[in-house]
Length: 337
Ligand code: AHM
Ligand code: MG
Image (cartoon, rainbow, N blue to C red; front, side, top):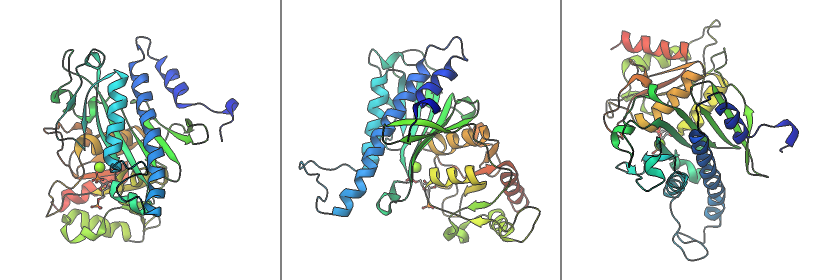
């Protein structure tokens, strides 16, 4: 419950941070606010979706007889609408769209930023009421004015201006970084405001968790198989055996591991050599956040944020978590390459 005298709202926080940049004109502030607004609408819809499913009588149509859109399509439309209307973003790459969505109207065409996003990550979990998320990356455009281009979006994570995620969980949180630490805000649903609840987030000292879809074990590289066994061995000094936790929803798995101290892994396999997760709007932004929280992210050999994307939807093996844990799995990958 919000008690006005004791809280910092997301908007207040962003404005305070903006004042640290004397030349800033507020564009990033407005962009983050647009994202927060869309997130609140998506959050409302996600909460209602469960209800509709449970009642089960409306089927694919809502009570007004309109066709009910799948939530990931709905989320995509919400974020695109908010960002287009906001005027600060000149192009979007989304998991839901094959090509770049370029805005060249009189407002957005002048926007300095482009956004890569996964509007509803882990959406296959909705029907079982498991946490899902939105992931976003904000880059400064490299093209001149006019509609943003694919070139604006194909930038390595190191060029990120900001990145963040929204987790629709037991509470809804927005976590973001502009490259100066990671801060988390919890939505107070009674007033619809994100409030600073997790300032300056860092991985804890103690390592406790490994997260991986072990059902794919047979297809994993030898280095990953060995690392999993390492996680399961007894060693007091390194707090092993670790606990195994896997939701199957990247944002939720990453968020829990950030708070509790754990590594998330989605390696390449013999059937999917580049793994499943997408570099531009899943791996890069999460990697940027992890590094800001004192952690590390790798494809097993290379730092994720240094990889130059070649295509919008390219996949990458992904290992993210506390530095020591990621370095350990990298060592196993190298040894058993
Ligand atoms: P999606 O973008 O189609 O939702 O897929 C991404 C999700 C991630 O949230 C999660 O980490 C991963 O897929 C889980 O995959 P798997 O079911 O193969 O373990
Ligand atoms: Mg996804």
